Image (tube, rainbow over all chains, first blue to last red; front, side, top):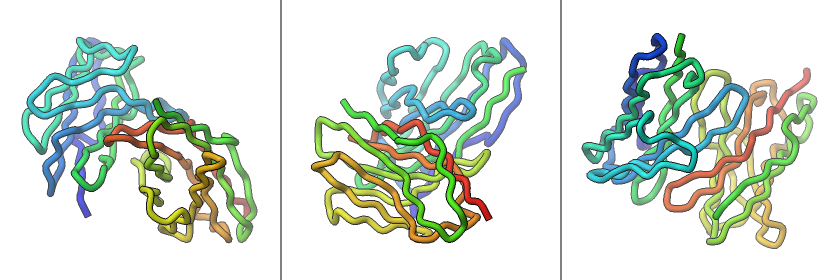
Length: 113
Length: 111
């Protein structure tokens, strides 16, 4: 079946630095990808919708200047957490939509120290 | 607008017993409904999905769910629990690829 990959699978960074997370659809083209965040012991919350070739649409309460999303091609979306702080530590999961299905990536665990 | 409510944040069953995890949804359009399982420190694994075909949906690992429009429910069941079923389970409703998740139910299986 179709696969969505994320890189890196885990990352530790220092407070104030920026971290980029990649989401790739490996065998299909995804015009739309989604970014979710999951805090420990909580559910997944949609952060933003990433559309190829256009600006991302952010959910209410998500800072677009802090979480930069770039969907530069039909198989790649990136999420950059800028000036990361410990409260940004979370599990970030992307999903990609094909005409027939939606597929979730394996997630990226971010720890900000 | 769409939303999901999972009744019971924790469910505990004995090995071999019936598993029932409850999910109610709200959607302004015909829903696509999903159940996912998540093991610690891992991503989501799709158990099954409802996409307006058969109301009784069979998934992996012996799980199944029944879509009941009149009750706006999509409860997940498994006749006989295994120890390996212990995990976090999420019900989700999706429209145009955008998913809204319930708060999750932690399933514990006692030997």
